[in-house]
Length: 272
Length: 260
Image (cartoon, rainbow over the protein chains, first blue to last red):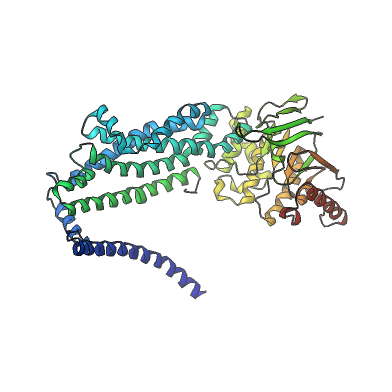
């Protein structure tokens, strides 16, 4: 018995150890590539240490392209939240409608699929014509990408998952208003949350790309693309690090927590 | 006759270029009031389709289905189905689930509550009213589902392989439960299964279907009083016959060789 117990503990401990080891592998590989590039191509390649040093410099107030790093981060996040928020506000109701009505699905889903095939940054022409340079075209690109993810996931999920509950409700004699509000909507929670998760990730990635091309003059994506001219690749690495760290924090930690809470609320424990 | 299925054919066409699937072909049967009828057939033979048509979820391609002489046009609370899959609403407690159907019956608040609790205790779940479905075992969920169905006081109770996902031990007690509910309520029950033991234990009459397209292959009336001892020689004989019937109508499948 004791042997078993201790081996259990060792498993959970070893998983944590492996996570640390995994990060260690990442940084070692990075270091190795940096050394390799410097030796064979004679190009200064930012090492992890250099990047962290630069991160500290930037955090302690050194401006990047005339703007504090905080402002870049805040601007990026606000564009993301704005684009995401607008897309969710339109996308969830539309997704629910398309999931509920086959006629609506037939009418609008093909359009959504057309939109889906076009990657976010490819909307640049449309974005510029509609909004000119600056914040708005970037928000527009984020909006588009989150929008189709939310609509498609919500609509197709709601259609599949809700059918058995809707059938059961019909059989129990429920009227259509009750079916919609008390059965269809709660059953659609799972796909709605999945749609939000996918949209959150899509939006975050497109945010970086959008800032590179929409002339936002601030933001993490903007700072990365500027390194083409400034050759300040170390700062570009800092920005990549922030993109990743902030993306992981918001999606894997914060949203995952919210998701679990919602699922428990609805009584649907499975998280796809 | 209470329930009549008259020359019913059901054809599914998934898309225009695909070959149509004939699930049920020219099938007729009738069920007197109060009978416990088991429809026995191999997996995928179209027996669930038949049940779905009686419930009103599907329309027959040909033929018609009459309940007390009136054609069935859609789902309704006079014919309640207990599905193979779980359909308890996971976001409601067990009691709320049972109340859900009762609110459309025009009862007062107190009557609804009283009825819900009555059916909850009928299936022995009185202590679990405030639990959510995911907190219950598979067998308890089935009982809750049964209580929700019975609370509507339907004329006809339809059961679509309700025990197929239940482990063998819980299954025995659920079979007893279903039987005692039938004895108390004397509801007309149409129970679809591929499990011979379930049919032998429950049925007044067993209808064996052919493989797809489903047609009536054989009818067995069982007069033995319930509850029945499935290990008695008579039942064993009957079981052997039924295994042969099923084996003929379908390549012998695992579930036929090792009935639960």
